[in-house]
Structures are given as C-alpha cells and as structure tokens.
Length: 265
Image (tube, rainbow, N blue to C red):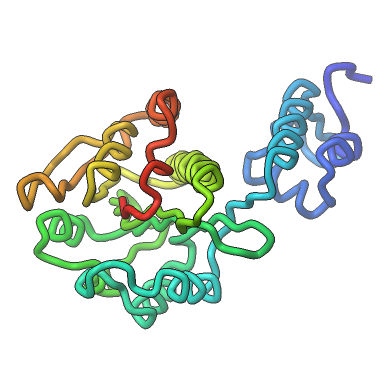
C-alpha cells in the first residue's frame, strides 16, 4: 500500500464527491492523480489540500460561482432594469442570439438561489473588439456571427462586464465583490489553460473600472472622452501565474471592485 496516496474510494470520501462528479473532475484535470482506472492513485497531500480549501470556502460563505443559463440571463435583465444609458443596454434578444453561438460566455455569483453579481467573457472577431474599444460599435450591435466558440483557434476575448448588484449592506457588497473578482480571474486562467487565447480586451468606463483592469496587468490601447473611457488589452503571453500575481497585489489595499459596485468594468 502506498502511504503517500489514496485510492479512488478514499479520495471520493475525503472530497465528499459522488462517483460521476469525481471522475469528471479527474478528466478535467481538477484532481491530481497517477495511473489509470481501476488502479488510479491520488496524492494525499494534494487531496487533503483540495478538501481543506473546499471546506474553508464552504464554511466562510454560501456564495457559489456558476455558469449562467438563459433563465439566469433573464433574471439579470430584471435585476438591472437597464441602469446604463440606452446605447449601452443589450436587449435580451441579442443575448439569446449570442448564446446560441456559445452558451458558456457568462458566470454569476449566487447565494440561496439569489443572483448577486456576474461576469461575461465574449470570444469575438478581433476587428469587432477594436471597433468597440474605439467606440465605433456598441455592445448591443455585436452581431451573433462575430461570437466564437471556445474551441476555435487564436481567440480574442472581450470582457463587457464584471458587476456586483449593490445593496444597502456595504460589507456584504465588498465580500461579494472580492469573491466575484477572485473567481473571475480563476475562470480566465482556466480558459487560458484549456483553449487557444491570444489576447484579452476590456473597456474601463470609470476610474474604478480602469483601476481593476490596470491592477490585473491590462495595458491601455485607446483613450476617449478625455480619459473617461479607456480601452485595454492583456496579451495571453502574460502567463496565468503573472495574472494571479496581479490579482493578489490588487487586493492588498482592499477590493477595488467592491469600492464601486455599481460601476461597469
């Protein structure tokens, strides 16, 4: 018996995962292992660390970061009630058309089935993104045919929004903002590891949004409206470790996203 490893049954019990979910996570690379079924071995140090991290997260809050469905997208529309100028509002009909091309473009934070915030990543034709950064095109006018699949080669990804639903509880908003930003970066890193992404782009429409992008390593490309609107790019050559480093540094002085939860990145 290998005293440094667990067998599959032991690892499943420690991680509290059903068989199907356990082996799916193994296939996706989320659970370290050696060998093949039925003789897989799982390093104790790795399994114990994953279990401890999961327990800490479960105990610290009830927040969940989940892939958004169309139903979730509709709930977001109802929550926001079009808080931005009309030219920036994306009709639900357009969202549906985008999701027909790629239904894994949005994640959200929820607690007890209540949506508290969300992030959207749009893999797009780069020409479309450049038009967006230069204000020659609005998000509501992005044609569905411009949306790419994650399996397409040499992707350029546009980040239209990272947003927390503001409440009267400032501490809760800060907690949700911290959680959303951390999970968003983890999602981005996962996509970079799994797919062929060459560049990331975003638009900072406020000092807070610009600070978030710059803290994450994005470099300014365009400046409009006397600096009120800036377009940014992050080369995927900036390795995931560097991206995580930028995230941690941005959080040392407090959570930038939570400081202005109504702002659109």
